[in-house]
Image (cartoon, rainbow, N blue to C red; front, side, top):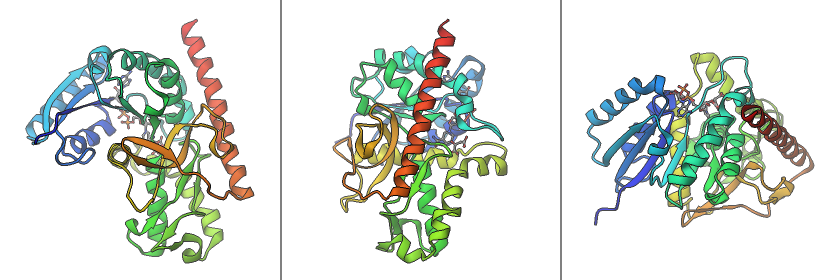
Length: 333
Ligand SMILES: NC(=O)C1=CN([C@@H]2O[C@H](COP(=O)(O)OP(=O)(O)OC[C@H]3O[C@@H](n4cnc5c(N)ncnc54)[C@H](O)[C@@H]3O)[C@@H](O)[C@H]2O)C=CC1
Ligand SMILES: O=C([O-])CC(=O)C(=O)O
């Protein structure tokens, strides 16, 4: 029997990530090859013509699963009845900026779109925030959309997770699927902590197989933490196809579940205080997903060095939260 179509909102749909993400979603890469999709594409007035161009191309691609396309520059219209919301709209950073430098421009967008989602989306809408600063935009969205359950609001750190898997796989000459259970703790920023202490490569502990703690504790960490900046340097634009692909991975695993072997993924979710993190911040944890719900992996042993790094990224998130509140207060004044 044909499934009922899912309504998927993509904000910033006329931008770079939007252009890579729309065909992935419409082609079944996110929710499966048996799931019809209705796309809701939101952008802003200056991008209206480009947004219509994206719609034309999606029509021309004749995706069998794509049952409809709604384009709008009005969040109230675009958010109506959406089941999944992928929030990409905002301003990307340029060379030399930290992700929090785009905060002033982006957090007010998330305050405003929170209320549109709260009013018009399906009551069980699952929200993924991609736009930077991703964790803090998600936090603001949570604060301004009290009608959406906090566990339905998340941010993208799966790109960092995938980058960590790929770095270890490259180092070992393995295929990426042979590497499992790395963790991204904390913020999608250069303070994130890519942790390999619980990971495996070819079924054995990563540290045992790599046999180079200096690399794992040094160059590996900084490569993953700085990968976004390296892409900006190389392309003159921030990552788009890998961001879109990771966004699909994030939503697919959340909705359809993580593998039954118990392997986990990283998601930015509202902290319940696990691992000593401040409750309420949107912090990236190792999670498993089943029945459309994520669960933080519990009971992992955390050494002193890791605890320090996990605290440093939590401290940055608390600072970002305060800065975001100041930006919103200034915008309201
Ligand atoms: N969390 C992650 O792993 C990653 C996050 N990003 C972030 O994703 C965001 C988008 O990146 P790109 O697509 O490269 O940027 P882009 O500039 O190509 O596209 C952004 C789009 O958002 C639109 N937009 C601006 N304000 C909007 C609003 N109020 N409502 C709806 N749309 C709005 C713009 O008109 C533009 O079409 C940036 O903030 C970037 O830093 C990028 C890569 C990875
Ligand atoms: O670095 C950026 O600004 C874009 C991004 O978030 C990433 O590539 O991880």
